[in-house]
Image (cartoon, rainbow, N blue to C red; front, top):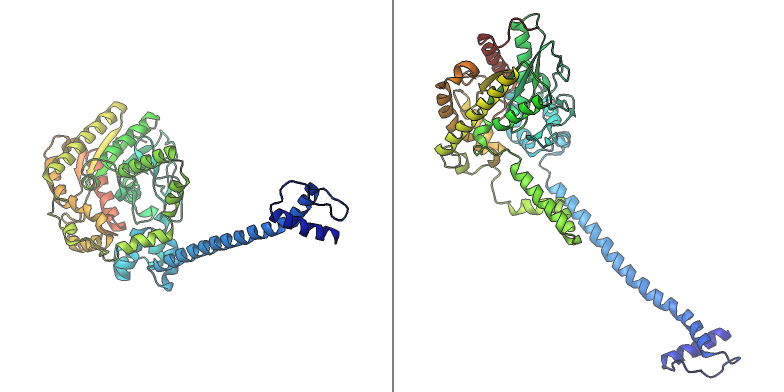
Length: 461
């Protein structure tokens, strides 16, 4: 009780600014400094209470803000759904926007026609296996596929797609006939399982034509590869003392799509380099916070809302094959000159290492194909980013005519451009990639050329 009375007196003394002078002696003549300390012991709870109250207000605001942010992102994710609940399983497997477009916009009938003999569930499984399995950086030729293991899409760490029936060993054995194949996603087998790519069919076809010989085909097809990268990949393997008996290059599409000769990852790598430089030079927490916020579903929804009025399909002019963005004679001349230089360089390297070379001009759906217009309808639903495939419609035939007149053609070049001219069967799973039957036709065309040109010596194992 005495301490309480003292505390009240001392609190009043402090309140009245009595300072550090000695206060009157109260209840035993206690010195002022001691009573001042005891009084503040009673005052601190009031200060702490005010601090706690302010902290609770602040923390409540923070918690509410975070909750609202999470709820907003959840709503944004729901609003971004493009499939009905019945298609939830498809959506769970298919995350890539192109594959979503295949399933959503093509419809069941077109999917079944592109994949004869398969159910929708099987098609979704094939597409789902390829979803998200993207190339990784490579310092020599910019990118390649990493090691992948799924039910229908498998890659070896060396960068070749695995033959599920009889894949040759790695490194290849010198006592067998080893054939390396380079190309883009049409060689890789975009949209088809491991046992329906044209390199897979080629191995069977060559073994049928050369019974008793141990022939192994290695599919080094990579998404978006152009002839310049294929040449570098071939040389990279030779530099590491990995030498096949023969190497085959399939081209004609991607070199026209990327008609400036710049590999597909170049813009991304330039942007990545800029971001890394910023990260090294900008230490502001707000800079890193902004980068993180830009990746949230809410930010994605905001970006999509700004494009709400735009059609999901290409504008009319973007599908106009005669427009300047798809038809440029000077660029096509550049494509041809670059391709021929790559062809000569690869042949020279092959000759120096004792490796046979064969260059194949691939079939495309826009040249001598009765169902070209139907495939072009597929292109319409793929979006404007794929409209550049129309460049091949203009440059392909022009380049083919020149290549067929050059002397190198008779020795190392063949054209499979016309293998589809007499069929009314669907040979494509989308705007560019072959289905199983299309890949069988390509494999047969290449096998005939190998046999006609005697590229596999009779003395080989």
